[in-house]
Image (cartoon, rainbow, N blue to C red; front, side, top):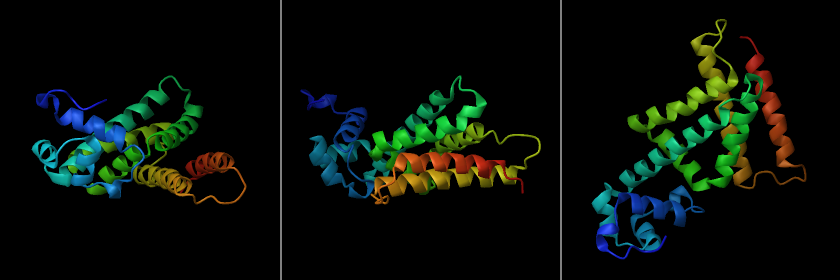
Length: 193
């Protein structure tokens, strides 16, 4: 995607697409309007024209990434037998974070931002975790479901954070550790409180 030939071709979607492409390996905390403008090939005022500053841009990126992440997770669970859904959910979650580190950080920012519209979109991920975990059974309270989904998120996000930041330095395979993680998650989900 090169620079548009006509000035009127620069719009919000063009800027977002360029950011996703040029910042794919960047980290969330590295975002600045000047840095983005330089990497995207536009002037800072163009970004301010379409977004309400850095926070507005971050919200747009988070919204887009959160919707995409939820769609990828949902698609991965279609036609999967219930007994395999947790594994597929975990594998898809991890794969998305590895293939799209910047987008994954955008999702995490969106959840942490407490932006109501973003949280509504992120709730789809929670619903998918609940579905994959087969937690909605008559013998489980809403409180138990909430806590167990939080545990799943902690397990996944903790593993992903360690893996992406070089936290696994020993010779053992992180893929093997991930298998242990999935089996551990299944055991936790079966516990009755």
